[in-house]
Image 1 (tube, rainbow, N blue to C red):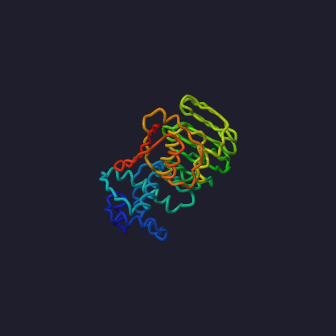
Image 2: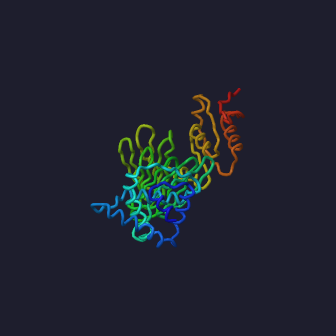
Image 3: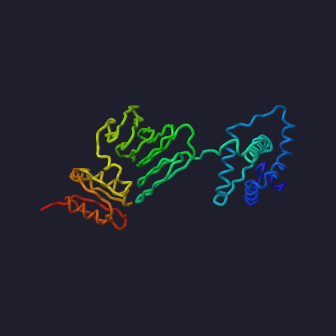
Amino acid sequence: MDQIFRKYLISVLNPDEYSKISDFLADPKNEEEIYTLIKPFWDKEMQEESEVREPNPEVRNKIRQAILIDERDSLKRKLVILKRTVQIAAILITGVIISSLFFFRKPTQEQPLAQLQTISAPFGAKTNFKLPDGSTVWLNSGSTVSFMSRFDQVRLIDLKGEAFFEVTKNGLPFIVSTQYGNVEAKGTTFNVNAFTGENFQTTLLTGIVNVTEKLTGKEVTLNPGQQAGHDGTELKVENVDTNIFSSWKDGKLIFKNEYLPSVIKRLERWYNVKIDLAPDKRLAEISYTGVIEMESFSEVLHLLKVTAPIDFRYDKQTRIIRIVYKKTI
């Protein structure tokens, strides 16, 4: 083990050796032996240095994070062995030794590094989960959220798509960041729709939220039953039926005088299908009112067809459904 440990400190291990030393370092039972192996290198380094170096926190954190990732993914990735000169290796030895001592001998003095977590809901599916602070998130089809595994000074959530939030009060700001703007809340339930190419909407059910548009910096405050929406020109606030914009998390799609192009986008995500709308202005003028809950996609297509002058065709090669305006006699 002494020979492998020497090679570990100067980064010249082969994959088998690296796996062996990783398992060795990760086992708490080896703490005393690890200290015995490190000490000679530590003493030599201290003798050769003319001044005492303070560990670089940034470098130390990067090394510790790399160790954690390697331990977690050692069976999934290949080790890339980098050729380093003796001079560069000597500079890094101190950092490696210090970080090893800090990690294995003082585990209670510093919390593990917060890591970025990403959760996605594929088209045709939805999911819900708890954030580190206990808040609940419902994630709609075709959406992704990212957040840190530990919240320190702010609870920052990056959203692409649509999500419903039930925020737990804990004193830290809760901010949902999207490409269009930010939504800040304390203890609140609200829905955010930030799909690319669609109108940005924040709908508040309980509590209070502030919505800030990124492009102009305009900020509005919402009360329960209100929605802030960007119609392509500016951010506006209006009173709405919040159930229409949040029922998706309960397995329902509610349409109220919603135009066909918008209906189609929601159906594509909901059923994981591709629908092509023919370039006919008359199609954009068709609106629907209704509720979809347990219906299959074929049933939905039939409902669309019998309630409006449309027809559809399925291309087996492209697997795309094309909707056209149906001529009436």
